[in-house]
Image (cartoon, rainbow, N blue to C red; front, side, top):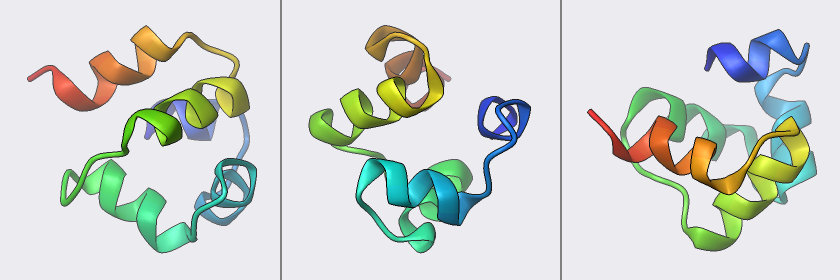
Length: 61
């Protein structure tokens, strides 16, 4: 995820902030699975963007 990288975070670091393992971050970034609503909120907080921005990253093609 370009946004994660632009914030200088590894998947492991972001996972710790969100409360998931780095493997989950990897799956989300690769489109294997999607974050749930709680994780969208945590991702937004960790990355300093709105929940809507995160939602659009994962759910708009």
